[in-house]
Length: 471
Image (cartoon, rainbow, N blue to C red):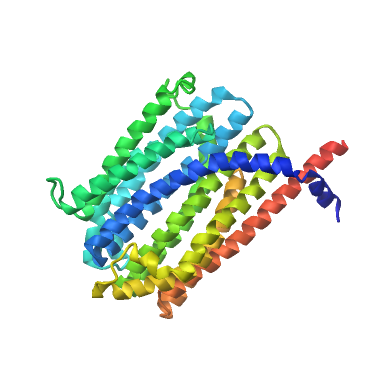
């Protein structure tokens, strides 16, 4: 056993410290995970109601949805830098730094959304260039042109949510998100199917409903943050027009690697959807079901990842590397455990999952349903890797390490995942199962590399602290 290993062993927390950290992490992670689930529930409502319109509408809506998330996630990735920055300022009791960080986050949300909106508006041409069916492309573009108006409210909402999360106050975000689920379902029912006296707009109606709900929920969270007695002292919108380039560049420096990481991940899912569209409409519809089911489950480790980034950020802010290390390993254990049950459901009750999205009694839906059950088996293995790497990325983000995970994501997702999925699934003709297997292999390699980076980071910290103690 070398000197560093002995030092790490000495720093291992006792059982009481583990219980305290586990409770603190759970207190923060549960409402965050529930908030992520509520966001996904709203998206799932859209997908389920698109399925009621038929497999063609579901395929077009899935293609458009993946395209929307691809660009929105880039902007959200930039803004994800806010939580570790705010957490470290709060941990170090630098309260005067909170307002400029939030203010620059709001400006960045507006700036980042503009190019995303432009690309979404002209998505039909892009789909055609990528070889998608003309009718499918037209329907997807119509949906996206309505969804564009949900983009800016959603990004601004996210900034306020990050502010609340950094203060360990995620429950307000959860309550607003739950309200949004119900409002979205009612708006979809009215606008997609022509109920309550509204015209039947189908996919366009789903986009309009999303824009309306995003605007309402932004208004709600902004009113809460700006009027809460604990937050009024920040005067968050005071001198809103002022630009603080130091804070802006700090957010961009940390946020760009996060955005590229998320973009590479979502980009592979978008590429997979395009591959499925080249294989068949049934494969694309089945892919939509499986990605939606995976997305629902992965909202839980996503919440844990966001929570551990804040816990680690707070610990790093006060220079407590032992607490930072403890929070990271507890979070990884929690994330793995909570993902096991849904994985078993995917493996042994895949037909039940598909039934939630697609009516298998309709003959036209039979092939898509069969493919969905087959994809879910591979997706279960994929989810175990994803929950693991999501949590590790959260730990590293809390330490402001975002460039390393970006490099790992690009090499694994686009180097290994994209090439293997396209080569085996489309070029060699092995179909949608091969596409999912290629993605799964990429995710497991990424998880292993991220774990190695985290261990190396902790060893380096141990060396530094050992040197300080020896001095």
